[in-house]
Length: 157
Image 1 (cartoon, rainbow, N blue to C red):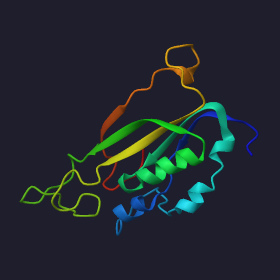
Image 2: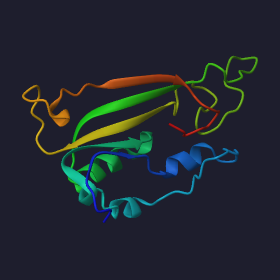
Image 3: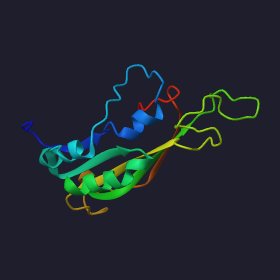
């Protein structure tokens, strides 16, 4: 135990998807060693979460169901999603207008394949919308982040 409780917890686990999408590429300053779902299940997130708290859990496309399962296991109820759409306007295109570096991330026929990640937002405790001033009781909205990707293949948030 850490000896304290947290009202906001942010988790960006090293899912297998992150490693496979950059296979064969050097991604500086990122440790892409993956954790298994069982290892993630063993995290004591529920124990460090305050009675009323938020958990933000980043998930790639192929791990949304796992993310929902983890939130529930840790005692959170999913209330919202944040969708991060990664643009790749600076990616080089070939003479046919397709991304020059076909990878699992973009493929050779789609500029939208694997260009988004989702952050599942979970809440622990009672959510009393607009009843009092405690931060957890505020209205939650769905948010969209559109941003140029840091480097080709980066998983950095």
